[in-house]
Image 1 (cartoon, each protein chain N blue to C red):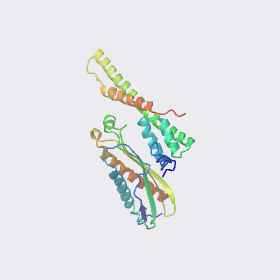
Image 2: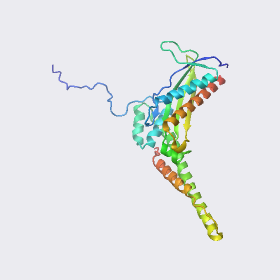
Image 3: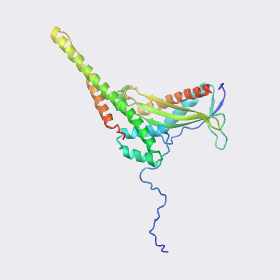
Image 4: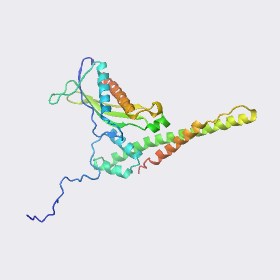
Length: 147
Length: 136
């Protein structure tokens, strides 16, 4: 299946039902990072991701995603047991399909465990979201390739 | 005008806005939610009630809790056993090199890192283990 230049409607990631563990920072930019990484990765492989236009029908492929978990982890635990506990994790699930019906599901997770002296939770969670976006794009491409 | 009813009765907006509200979550989201709440020490009964309010059947709820409990137990045992192994290895290296130094002379290693951090990991694992729910 040739996907180069194919239009794709990429819905903003949904927070509905997401498990967001307590943070001392605004987590919305984290979702933006996920969305940016996903769009960039899809574009790299030749898809043409676009935001949905209200009132207009969806074009081409339709990709929706929702956050399962946004966990900033624990700086203390990362400092104590860096590779084993306290990781910042961003997990998402979603569907890919056409305007009529979804034909595939994906589930991706990004984790960041290692940073000097435990690192900064916000930066690590943002990195994890970017990683989840890349993993999600890989899975979407695999779904499209399998069709 | 007296209608014979107390003011504010019957209550509007039933169900009341206290107590758990129905939640729309996917299975993965429920799994993540259960794990986060159980890790934080919330009682299982409360979580089962929340799931029932959200329309999840008893069998599904128990299956989900069992899945989450298995993952939590695996993680907790990893910390406990790994930590204990690190403590034993640290002590063994310390005492073996100490014996060698006493009998033949030379230096010995006090390998305190694995003992201290292994001990902390084992205690953390036991704490995690205490929060794993017992599924009826």
